[in-house]
Length: 217
Image (cartoon, rainbow, N blue to C red; front, side):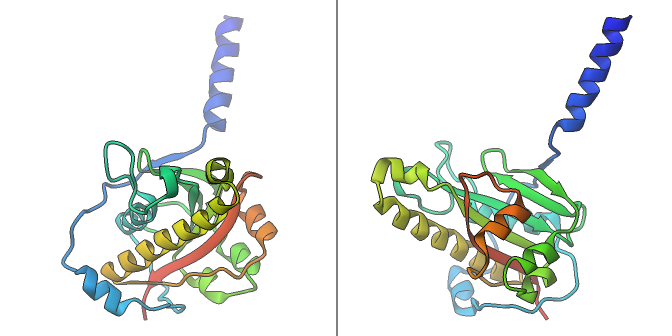
């Protein structure tokens, strides 16, 4: 009886320590908005309505950033040597049917793993020189990179390849946002150490971009 009780307690503790996993809706692979139209209308938008995004929109945005597109595991953005150094996070503050918090995107299963509970937009804003669009966006997509995934093969030049790749991914998000009638902007001005602390990033990751997203005025 004591053994069974101890086992039950251990199981409960393990479950409480397990990260919350959110399976995202399947992304759409077609829309009524042409690539040409998204290119024409792409702009840096810093003012957003105080209105929620849907979890379907979040799913689509994350898929555009680093989603899997083939059985071999290739993704929506090109990557030198298919080494995929980027990691993608989302800071949720106003999304229907998704709790506020920081999540990490796992493209292999198209799912989110919760990192931290609660609305962290204001903290992220303060770590980025107080740029108000970060706290005003319904979400913030944060890109980081593990440089070693690329530099161990390509040496110092791999750093350049990482920076190229995050540009590809950010443009994907920008164009996807247009097709969803959303606004976004790419932000690179922030204190790296403060962003890492807010996001609870591992030591080997370095933050590269913050992209607030919201409904446009």
